[in-house]
Amino acid sequence: MKANDIFSHDYFMRQALKEAQAAFEKDEVPVGAVVVCNNKIIARAHNLVETLNDPTAHAEMQAITSATNSIGGKYLHECTLYVTVEPCPMCATACFWAQTGILVYGTPDEKRGFSTISSKLLHPKTQVVKQILANEAAELMKTFFEKKRKKY
Amino acid sequence: MKANDIFSHDYFMRQALKEAQAAFEKDEVPVGAVVVCNNKIIARAHNLVETLNDPTAHAEMQAITSATNSIGGKYLHECTLYVTVEPCPMCATACFWAQTGILVYGTPDEKRGFSTISSKLLHPKTQVVKQILANEAAELMKTFFEKKRKKY
Image (tube, rainbow over all chains, first blue to last red):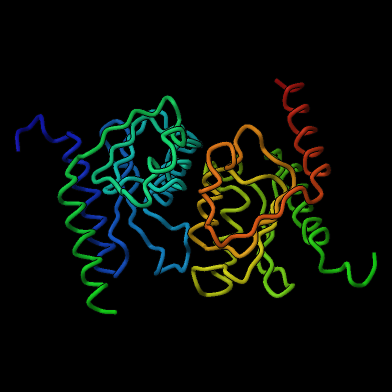
């Protein structure tokens, strides 16, 4: 890796993928997220829906709560949310309320991604970058659901 | 009140309105929610976005987290969520993930309510009842925003 690559989208998405892997190891749908502000990771989270019995415990929701708590304000204007899979409408709307500066996601979610409903769910000021390390995120999801199907 | 009115939609919505009033008194946008299962209130919550500096701390989100925690499972099939104002897309999608049995809301939110985006945000099995004590909920919102406008 070149020195100027250190703070690339790939670098931070790789941190989100580590979170997704942690979810995978807990038998959770493997989605991970990090929030970055001034090149510093201020929040890390992974999906904990099954562990917490909480349908709202998506990686992004926890990351947003943790990041706003870290900042001490309810907005993430200056922040980038990295998430391995396209957010669902719940998480996209949480990005809206936080007025998140940039949303970077990996693989699209053709079934439950926010864009299957409406791109208007995001704040008009939020920039969107997609397909960052998409193959890695998609592969993790595919492996997870194949394992699930074998189990049941 | 007649005895058979005790467990009416009005009765439970009045409990949600008490939560909304509690939010109002904390200078929070006055939205309240309760979750009812077998005629028993298993969760109560009100908007705490400002208090917690957390854009995800809507009344419904907290009520769903609390209710699923109370039940020990991630679904609210047998439950009714009462909320004083039409849920935003974040909260409607949280209802979706919880597969909430019935959603009862008071006043519509013509600016940020989920139905301004898509009614598909809710789970197809979720029944929706609206306009329950709508005037009370709307009046509380109106008073809140009038007070805000005078202040700033």
